[in-house]
Image 1 (cartoon, rainbow, N blue to C red):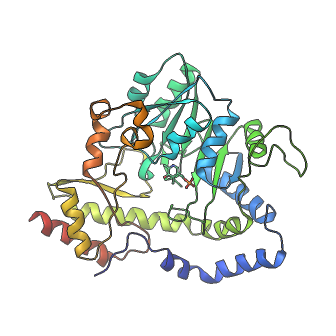
Image 2 (cartoon, rainbow, N blue to C red):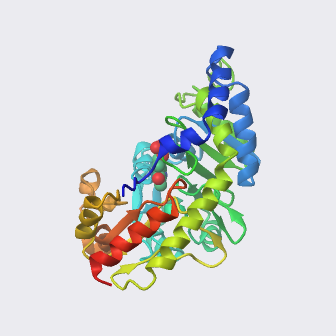
Length: 368
Ligand SMILES: *Cc1c(COP(=O)(O)O)cnc(C)c1O
């Protein structure tokens, strides 16, 4: 049996008539920047996130970068960011001229904790970027309290956390802003690059909108220098269609995750993802920690099952951060995760049969 890690073709086929209509309507309008599709998306996505403002952007990396810029973070400032994440949440700090300060993560939740953040605070700390990794939010209440107490900004990287919740709080709604990616493989994915920033702060949102559009809200208006990172009209039209299906797709991911858990709970050689109480984990990724990880990965591959590793190297150990001279003892949890994590397919188009097949293979591999 073949089990793909993700199946965007199957997803497209399931909504093809709606997509065709949305795309054709943009194509025949002859208007490809801004317009109704972008406005509609921004309105609906801010409502869904439980905030008042949403600024559509070219991608989430730009969202994080421009958020830091809009908050006035730059040279001499330190920003705390997880050692265990995709590189965007670190590289944007350097891009604005500030210093990234890595913090290690919780071994079971994979995310930074209030305690880790506290240990990295200095007089120069201006902000914390938390990453709601794999679909589960960090402990955002205590972190928000800590940031408020220390008078530092909180940016939520929600690129893997569409519709995720923590104690009734929507991802992106508690920090100074939340940054979402709509990269094609994300839980809500466009047909190319796209992103957005959500916030309750209208001044911040306006600044961000200007930064993403050469300093202006209108043509030939340049209050300051910015860049070009707008949400594409075509991508917005596609996202408007996919937004209608997001809740159902998310439910399917959660069901798939539960099937894995029920079927793998007795396998001693692996650890299953832990879901914190009172949270909605939306399972962008279903990440296990496995003994003999690389051998298991090859065994699954030979038997038709695609898996991935998120991530093969923790950020401080990437060549890009070699200049910081970190070693594994500085981030022991991240160092151990890079040797043991394995992401199993969990996308909404999987069948129950496919999940049972993967589970049987894992049990066979370990002889359990
Ligand atoms: C995907 C991702 C990003 C980057 O999103 P882009 O839209 O590709 O720029 C940032 N942070 C995390 C945690 C991600 O998973």
